[in-house]
Length: 447
Image (cartoon, rainbow, N blue to C red):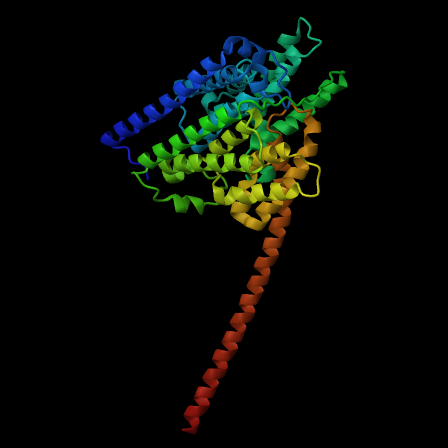
């Protein structure tokens, strides 16, 4: 477990500072070399419509996109510090997920109305905002609704106000919805807010379409930053492993135990500590990036979001034992279909939200879940018009809800058959024992 004595903490802070500073300086040097106008790019990102799929790396460039991502990260981190929110596995998952989606879909402007709605809900229910903060941060999955209403082609004078009001309403109602939706998939979909966002997005999209507000999905993807993103990811994942190694007493002791965890409602920070959790996050980052490279895909905004989401949820439910079956299932599903490799890669990364299925029910059902996920996710986006960024979370919720009764029925049947078998075995054993006893008594009588 974690070793945080004073001498070791100094060493951990020194190593962390050196590694992180090196990554940041290299990145700044790269942006300067590329001669990007970062602030112009950021303005383009903020005023884009952000509907799926809008890669901010293509819209504003790599410097502006990372600036947007760090602004959002800083915004959330500052709020957590002010409210003294405990850093749990789920909190880390929310940090990395929101940070990842800052590369496509979320910007520092279109997420704020959700937080305002969350604050109003906390006042209405008389609860502390910090109790629902993580839910609200995930709820920014519906950020494209704000951008679509505010910056669509036929913008009017009231569009900005309408967008803010819509975001506030979503932020207000998402918390009670999320708590109810979790029961549908029983925690087997790690991206519960993706499922909630899909239901809520479908309703809002239907209302908008009723009043002739047409939503047009798009596919804007970058191809020019592959090497830079791979180098940044490699440095980040290595940093997580190295820092985790030092925190865990300069060892990997206990990681095997983490790999045996099912991942169902599992907070790795609380169960195994920061050290092993960071090690797992770094390793899972390389696994996710390896999957993208295996499919020969160029790393871009959406795929980077998928990788970072896996890294975040490697603090809350994912490890390579329960995620690889999902990736295999998604990969196998592409054969015989017309699905392009980019869609397979993106669906595979986000489809790992079904990791607890493999963790609890085994590899076979994990592969089945991944196979079904690719089929469902390609059709389900039309329901919300591409305005729920966690479309894969919506799909995973449906797949988990569909599979659970089937898996439980088969499991219960096997358990019943096993009990019957054990009963028959016991009866046979008892009969043999009784017969042996009878023969022993006869032998004694004969003697």
